[in-house]
Length: 299
Image (tube, rainbow, N blue to C red; front, side):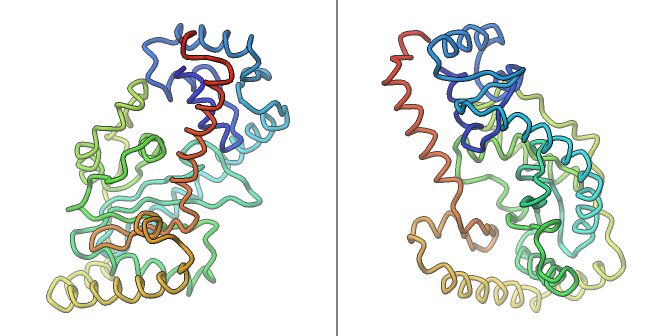
C-alpha cells in the first residue's frame, strides 16, 4: 500500500501528514486511490486520524507539535534566506539550497537548526567548505543553529550516488535560493526522484537568484584558481578526513563512507547516518504491518 509507506516514512519523524501530502509523496495514480487505501487502513486501525492528519502513532499532541513547527518555519524562513545569501557570496559557491526539516516547512525552535545544501565549483569544494566552517567557528562561535552546512557537492559531481526514498525526499523538498543555472543542471542530472514522487510539482527555476560575489570573494578566487588552489583544496580535504576518521572511529567502515563522505567532489557530515536508519526502520515497520494485517491483498 503506497499510502501506508508514505505515512510510515513521516511517522518515523513523528510528523502527521494530510491526505494531499500523502498523495504528493507517493506514486499513487490518483488521490482517489489514496482515499480508498486510507479508509482501509483506518478501518483496520493500522493508522490513526486526528483533524486532517494521519499517522501510525496515536498521539494527538503530534499534530499540535507539527502545527507549531509549521508556524515557526514561517517565522524563521526570512533568517534562513539571509544566511543563504551570505553563503552564496563565499568563494566558489555556485548554488545554495535550504534542506532538512525547514525545507519541509517545519522548524523546532528548541532543538532545530537550519540546514543548507551547497554546490561548489569543480575541484574547489574543500576550499569553499573550509572558509564557511572557519566563518562559523570565528564569527558564530561554532553554533550550527542557523548555519548548518553539512552537505556539499561540486559541479562535476552533480549526480547523487545514493538513490533511495530518503535521498529522493530530501531532493524534491530542497528550496533552491541561489545559483539558478547550477541548480537546473543538478536537477537535469538527477531525474530519478520522480520515480519515487511523480506527483510533486518541480520547483519554479525562475524564482532562483544568481550568486553575487563581492570583491573579496572574487579576489580570493583569482588567487586560488591556479596550482596553489589545487594544493590547498587537497590539503583541506586531507586534514578533514583525518579529523573525521579519528573523531568517528566507532562508525562502521561502510557507514563512514556514506555518512561522512570525503571525496574530491563530495562532503557529507552526517555522523548519525540517519539515511540508513530511516530506510531500515521504514522497511522493517512496513513489512511487519503488511504481514500482520495482510495488506497486499487489499491494495
